[in-house]
Amino acid sequence: MSRTARRRATAILSLSVAGLVLAACGSSSNAGADPTGKPTATGVKKGLTVYFIPKDTQNPYEVLADAGGKKALEELGGKVVVSSGTADTAAAQIPSIQTAIQKHADAIVIAGNDPSALCPSLNQAAAAGIKIVSFDSDISCGTSPNHLFINQADTQVIGTSEVDLLAKQIGSTGQVAILSAAASATNQNAWIKYMKQQLTKYPNMKLVSTVYGNDDPATSLTVLQGLLSAYPNLKGIISPTTVGISTAAQYLSNHKDVAKKVTLTGLGLPSQMKSYVKDGTVKSFELWDPNKLGYLAGYAAASLASGSASLQAGSTFKAGTLGSYKVLGSAGGVGPSVVLGPPTVFDSTNVDKFDF
Image (tube, rainbow, N blue to C red):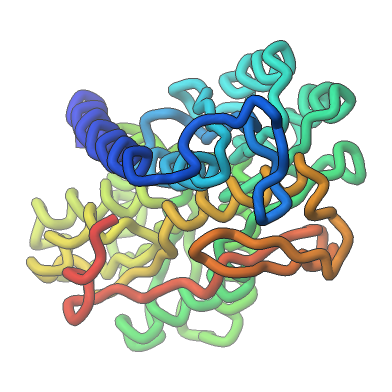
């Protein structure tokens, strides 16, 4: 997909999401901030402002997640401000953190493009009393600032299940490769770590290369073509990024001779991957609902900012229609955290049932 086409698709998606948000706003009894700032029945204060800082503002996955956060804050009588750059870099996100500080935001929800480069700015935000929540891609700042990570699914399960999906489709044999997003993305590297561990259970599958498309369609296509050229006997590709897998699927769909030899799986949006499943390019892939991920992050941020939840393991908070969630203690360099739920496998039998 070209950058122009991607921007057009994102614009259409943004308009659709905006329409849904407006519809939700019109039917909500909690719409608008309460000037008294009194807590709601959930213990969350009204009138909160939460800055959502996605990896970039053009990624359809991030747009869906941000819309979930907007819905959550509208239900709670607050608001979300979405702010970020157009490139998946820490440098593009830092100005948004500074703006959140200047505007006296109550909380920041951020998908980190870099595990540590954002820490100094986030520490400034925490010092100003702003609660920090990461989602999608965690930050790694040690104990400062203290923050809550909203994990889309168990990290190990994502990594191992991706390998299992591919192994099942290629008979557990052959050369395989990974088409990732940014080389510094915390979530991608954590999943890849578990992919490599899981591959040891398949001695006849050999990981020959990991390439990085930076969640940019043009870059993803370039590294994909380089991968196919360097490894003509490549049998399988795992792309744990919605931009990477959709770009690779489009290429394979247009090059059936290559698609006959190379099996593709990974993490994708059903709305983007549906046509490739139906034409046989892709048999199965996984994901969770990014809208629910953003919705959960919104409730978590509001609960922390209101003091109705804490970072202590075992602390609980209500997340609207998703129910109650418990904060998990730190383990393996992750946490404190909250897990949305297990990923869903999509194939020809169910891909039409999902509209995100």
